Length: 280
Image (spheres, rainbow, N blue to C red):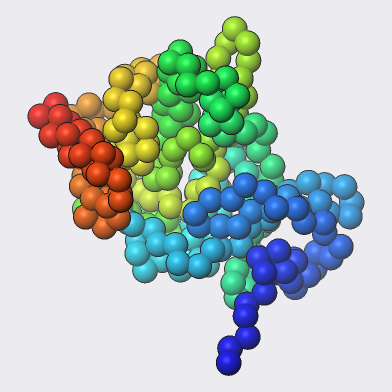
């Protein structure tokens, strides 16, 4: 009979101790599909986040990736952002990889909360959602300032290349992985981007695929707000035809690999695939 693995908080506490960090106070935080997340308070008074992997998650663009590789990719992506964009406060830095079995990470706190918290409090106001999409578009353009170096390092190239002028892609860019706050009279303002373990090098337009499936498939009008926000940051927009190509490819992948149980959603995705295929 096999022993049950330690609970996630015990895993993180053991990792911290092995790396010389003792006496930490852990409190569960809102995690995602890939990691258990905890608020970590150290004896000196500093506040961090800590995370350890959940079992069974697979990156759809790198199915053989293991939890250690995922965290090293995240560390590398954050280093590229910090190097290109300077002392930015919108990424979780400092970042400390905690090697072990399983591995984990200790990362700096990014201010704000996911926009869905604001939407739950204030309702699905169309102007509010539009401001969120505009902010997300502008921030994605900022991320895409990072060009792929000759040596890509730990971050993989997106399958299907080689790609012209590849950039740093988040590849899990959706409402749950951005943080911000609502300001009366100004709308929702983005303050951070988290969960970089799916980062790749590739074409900028590919980074819209995740948000296309989670938001634009059901609310296609907000795509224009997103694209306008993107252009507003750098003056360079995304290629709409390529955006539609990647939106279609992502919906087709999900229908093939992880089709939703709800027939209404499947039919909506099929209709959107038809619409976006013709638009592209």
